[in-house]
Image (cartoon, rainbow, N blue to C red; front, side):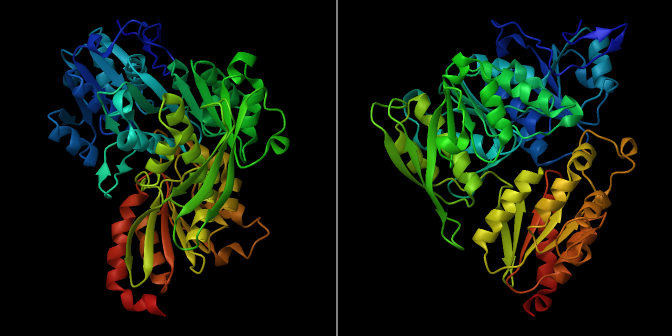
Length: 522
């Protein structure tokens, strides 16, 4: 019988249902099968279990770089999802993208195999480590990558060789792309805590980082209040400390003020604002981000962390930090990572020095190439606030350049909920093409009225230059890429933006620029 709930013979896959007792470990899983093993969140966990000696295999719809890597490690991956793939398995793992009528789910249910959500596996992994979770509508991958980078490159003793489960790849110090999952020998686990389906309620970390709680995933939560309440609950599970951003997000401040007094008392707020500007901190400690600046065109970000006495020592500290990734949003992300490393026991100056060599999570302001002085940059931003932060950073990094954006919306529901906010964020660019929507777990037929025009129509309402002059919708992303190349000129920067497969267009754009390089010099 599956551990997931069911009613009247109907299989119900509930991501919030906890499937394991506190005393269970990964070695109680037995033979474990991942449905959709090539997904970013699934491949990481499969690799971590494999490194710990668990018998792992999986299935996916088609080959990918993730499945290639898993196969290179000796993990069997079947392409095409069918009942025979789960024969003889003890545990079957699903993600929120998997539906109850999936043939492998049906077969596992009929065979009485244990069916668990990916978050159950991550919770098991956390139970054996000093866990640090990173939650929030945006900034999760970069912040968790920064903390993992600090520990990998500067950790000593039990802080060395951390485990990490990050839903994306990381750029190493030498620029090599590292996978987002690793089962280390140290006693720390850094993990993204995905709030999209409520499953992060299962996690009980030592330290919980909350980058923001700006409303998102309202298809699951329904209302902004429900969304914020989930973060209040998550913060309450942290046994040692909560680290929260206090900038530009009334959601986080609302969460902070709703915390139980004992939780708020072990909460640290990092912010560019002072205590008077923030208002009621509910007993939390404030760490200021001061003197933030970026050298134009260099991409170097500078700031000072003002840490009050009593937090990591008796004396107050001012720590100078330099980043090679641009943008004030990255100053915030780095602040959270440095504070977490210090709370784990690392010298704060050692942590701040280590983050300097961080080159970024893959697909976060990742420069993919330059042809005839037209630069192509890829970024995962898929929420309006992320896009606004990206384009602000772009203006600081390339102050003399025309900023052109090909944006692929991620999820029909998010596009519907935030179409106006997307239009406002994209208005920070000079030239925008909105492509067809990446559906992920959703279906177009359930959202027949949501198209690229949903965002373009909102742009028409802005008090901005006529929308027809700077934004248009083009369903096919290959056509959009070719159009943008033909519009590009010497010195421009083209951004591919979104959490779907728009990243594939980078090579298309670079090749097209090479073919049309004489057109880019006018």
